[in-house]
Image (cartoon, rainbow, N blue to C red):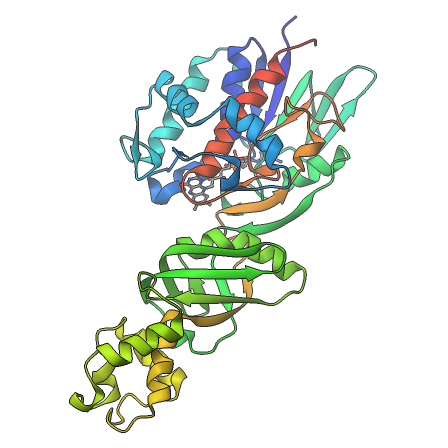
Length: 414
Ligand SMILES: Cc1cc2nc3c(=O)[nH]c(=O)nc-3n(C[C@H](O)[C@H](O)[C@H](O)COP(=O)(O)OP(=O)(O)OC[C@H]3O[C@@H](n4cnc5c(N)ncnc54)[C@H](O)[C@@H]3O)c2cc1C
């Protein structure tokens, strides 16, 4: 008798798990709450789907168990992702370290997964089937799932319901509730890869500005973390890749009711500390005597809106004569360009987040991704306590964990 496996969730992890479990001889039913599979995949990478990264390692992820994560990433790495997709018909290419479909269309990634599931006779896909309860029947060694009043029974189940990020795509957090029904704990779940809200009231004046910058986060426990890239200023705070990369950690710091102050360097290629830099520029740049106004003097240092803000924060009026302006204030403008402090008060909600940090702890699973609380139940994807940086790491984790959960769930004694 072949094993029957129920896969809950038809996202990146669930579809991969279903394909691998069927390839390994199991009869698979994939249960998806939406009316179609893979909705979130379509919006990934701005529609281009950044599906992996050549610079892979556990340090690219947030998790309480990096050692355990490494074991799995080593078993299914970026080359394995390339081979998996090539074997089901998708050509991929590497671009700035990221892995993309050659077509640059996220829909191609979803299509090849769907076609492969259709080709596998042992996979049955049921859409519009949201699972709301799970229980292990110890006597019969079966896993029972409820969808409304319908009860489904399987030899094994793979939970791949995603997290709570972008719930419009179907991942509404119900996976966490199913995990808790089995006795699992949860590492607190917070939005990650998300915009940050700041206290300063001047943000409206610079909304829309995009600038290369380096952001420094300092925290007693985690130390100093720097992120560089294109910073986007919005009317309530900051956005852009460097902000996304820090956002999960910042949400955990804020959860502990600690203050978060970020230092932004808008001239990250300039050498030396802010004060020395400022001294140097005062000496080297055009002397104030040659300029009419303060605004004229500071033209061309940064984006005009940003520069106007720096002048105001330093206590200078852009229209005041440069000659005779307080030299300390002039220095202060330069210092602010190198080190503008902003106070983070929170982040946007799960609706705007690309992923969730936190989830089912990895040490509540075996090395085969099987629950230690409910043997026969396996886990994959974002539902677990693994959140990757921007750059294809989250999908790499979905393929990796889905692949391994599919293989492990299908093998062994029934
Ligand atoms: C806008 C956006 C852009 C992104 N871009 C990238 C990118 O370029 N690269 C990258 O690596 N990552 C990216 N991510 C993150 C990545 O998409 C996710 O980490 C990944 O899709 C998670 O896969 P998953 O299968 O674990 O969960 P999901 O993709 O969320 O899939 C879970 C599925 O389970 C279903 N489901 C949930 N609960 C139930 C239930 N109780 N019963 C039945 N079905 C259920 C849901 O409907 C959903 O289809 C992006 C995310 C967003 C929101």
